[in-house]
Length: 482
Image: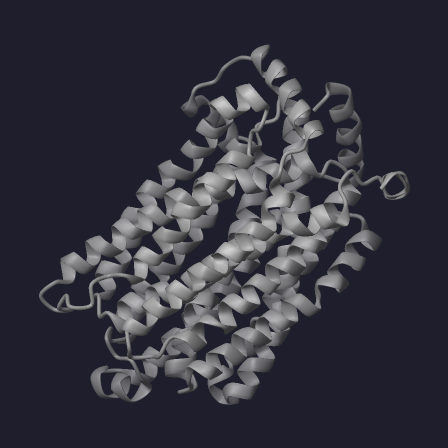
């Protein structure tokens, strides 16, 4: 262990890095299935009107706008009994809120199936909306603490890249199984089968939960580091929520980073939510075909992880690497646009290639965010990871809202009919079936590609953290004891 530290500059073993990465396995297993089926389940299987699906997401976004940054602010400012007595800061939050989050996910699919999709639309709406709010609240508290632990636990650039490599590979495994196994556990056109899928997902999630425990455990050294940070925080000025919010939004480096992150997240969310629609209405496939194309996408992402890891160490510039990954994602959207012509095999190949860009974005996000948080710590003379991850989570949730708004605009304009569960039904019910099918291609490839291109330009133009600044900040952080 000592030789490992001396040679590579690492403070954590490979086992701890892998176990910490299992938090990605745990979260992606649930969020993957959520993003894949939640809109499809309520609009297509349950028959909730598209307008009400969108309304639920818009109202949910109002809560989201308060929830994520507020929870991040409170977690950073509150000193809980376990912190005062034993020195723990993140671990209890992670453990205590993982379980209610899992059950709130289950609640989404436990909507009473005897409610009439015509006369009980508002009952369906409120069940959908309340379950979304609970899901997001518990996820936010869990996720803020799990991600805020990263820059504290892994302190050097080399260690962060290696830990991210483990986390990326393990997290992608989580996405692979989340997008390949759940589609096999439900039957299209049978809403009750989604409950079975959710219950099985819940059981498997508990296994992943225990795998991450060693990685998110805060050891004696880390608890001592938190004690030092608390003493320094006592010497600094206490800021209210809105003053802190203004400071966050006025920080150009942070905002440019999260805008770039939003582009990647929103495009991935759009293509993920559009997956069942592509299979059902564009290529007229089956649930097994959905497993094939999503498996191909994630095979590309997982298979490219080692490439991105080696390239990142060679280039040694997180901005350049993030741009490389962004351009790969944008360019590889193009084959997906022609999926109606190429069919299942062509779509599977296109998704395999697009997964390479996804893997690069996934890999580069944590170390780049670590650079930003270190820079903020040096400039502010205090660590406030939870606050910034809270606002970062706000943009993650906005990607879901963006997906709902795109659906809400594209579907009515192109003549998509909610409740149509097959291509034959869509052709029979829609006044413009061909346009409705093309609308799915627009929402799942053209719009996200444009979004990625815009955010690439913003990141290239205004993100200015260089490798030299990263090294300078490392020295200053040691001097500050942070």
